[in-house]
Image (cartoon, rainbow over all chains, first blue to last red; front, side, top):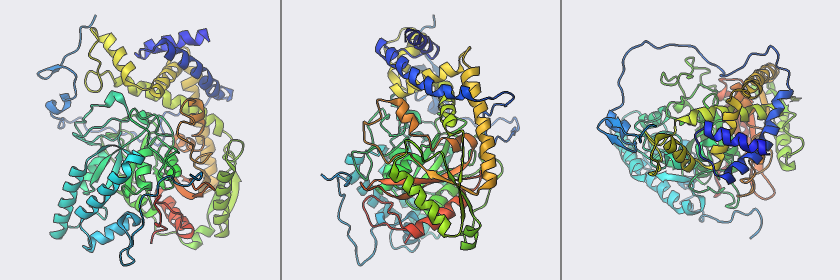
Length: 93
Length: 511
């Protein structure tokens, strides 16, 4: 369990989500159950089986032509902080 | 209160001169009234808006409503009709849309705190199609946050209740859309289906829900959960309405890279009894053993005997990878979600905490405060499945499992035209029953996850009621592109069975 707790701690850093101690404990115990069930796939012999990421995928490329873009003002209207047509963020350390 | 008796009887059925109330009509029947000018689109919208308001305190189907916009569309329809314009049959028929479909300038939350203040600058392609055809959008329906859940209890705002019994869940994640249709707050709705999110709530609410073939309906503007699985689908009170709404939203869209260029089957004519005699039906063996409620198993048997009595060849078919499919599905959707949800930083849009002083802290805090527990759980699981050292054993293994399931399915669909099973292993469960136990909630999706993995089309149809009066849903799945075939079989089924699809009574069959 302690191992899973530190794993969840590590995963929370990778996924940029702060988790409280309680949340980490809860996630660790639930992850244990869920991984237990998910491990079922490891019983299958998949030697030489290719992966399927998408079904019915039809390869096509459009012409590289400039099109219309959304108005800047509308796109930026949801930003938390801005200056003119720029988005402002806190200091990057 | 007697167990299972709907806790609220909405209102007395009033019949004027033997004619039906609007809520008792299918969308196509309302359409007929509109084209005969017996009623105006404005009156239709006003009627359903009043009805929505009356039922909403108990149901909570909607996160946002927009009656003013809907009325404006309705008035436009009336004007166009006066001018003799040729209109889509559903012009003027109110529709509700799931809150993960982007609506320009209108709040779109995806059931999440992190998008509590998000106003999309564009319309999803399916919304554009509704607007082009003059369907008044009545509002945005409640859902499990980002589509993650099977009860709508994972909404960041409030749970929706089942219109047949307010102590039960409506299913999820498109629970708001299904509840709105089953109670006829609206006659039509759109949901989205990643691993059952259209079909499972349709089953729990006793209405029709279609998952289209992956790629037939554009995902542009549908807020991404698991992109290789997400599809938008119709939820309706009759199969005829479902097919009409599906045809309206389907089609190639260059803005979705996975949209299919080939049009697929054109609408099939009515099925003939002769065709049904040649039908090969496979009843899925793995969807009926341990963990399946007796009444659910019974309803599948009833449908199997129905097709048999019509002359179809009905046999049992085995999909031996069913349990593996559930494991693969949860690994894949979590992996894809963890990647897709990386975009939520609270900087360009969405919830942002005012407190952070550096950018990294801002990311951590916004995502901590913005996401709910189920979303965090999936991001953690998905990040694990994709992380170095575990990628081969989990994500890649799940993708290879998907290939094996695909091979099994191809074989099954060579032998059978139609695969049959329940939509859910149990009848609708109670509010609060599974929300604390995520694994139990995941297991309730066992019947709905295989078809998305392989790209089949599949419909959930009403299959009768439990002794407690709760609806049961049955699934019919078919090879890709066979939506029309499924709808025609569903029509045949509904005409014979006349299952009630309106929680307030009297809408039987298709009139």
